[in-house]
Image (tube, rainbow, N blue to C red; front, top):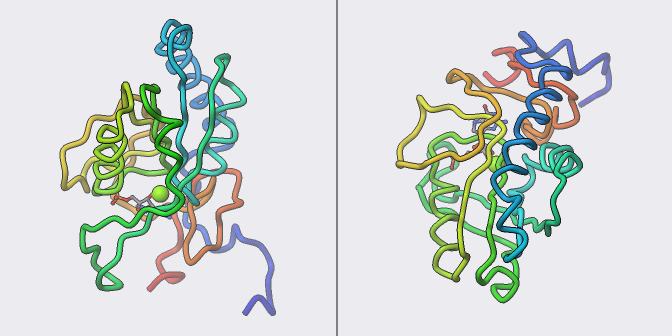
Length: 190
Ligand code: 5GP
Ligand code: MG
């Protein structure tokens, strides 16, 4: 593998969001979030929780545009069951200390909202441990794929049902470092 490596871009069908488009989307989201929490940070902790690995670039860029005091936590999730079909059970690793989240305003930060199972389950856990509020911020939303009802509070872009890579999103752990969001050529994954 990689012996004849040329460029990651040769594996892409098309770029759907350029670096410039992503940057203005981040500006817009940061403004919306700053507005929403501007008052509450005077009374309560504001905590962003990034769902790894896919959201690592999104959250890094987003927090640098927020003019608010905030804490940042990271956790990992995985669905387990058969390898191709999600069982609908979500496994969480690295959950933050519950004491740190009690009565906090929690904002879950995801790369892409698909079936919605991951964020549905996570929201439930954060509410159970006593967060004051739990909201959702997702870079991308694929509403056509939703299987559980979920409300998105802050949304980057809505996308069609196609497989995307870049800006944190991977295929087999590769392509996360692309600075834009693209559709992968079918021949790469079929
Ligand atoms: P769900 O909403 O189904 O619980 O999980 C969403 C997760 O599925 C995302 O965090 C991401 O890991 C994965 N996913 C869904 N659609 C795509 C896609 O188009 N590209 C990539 N790379 N991952 C996706
Ligand atoms: Mg994810």
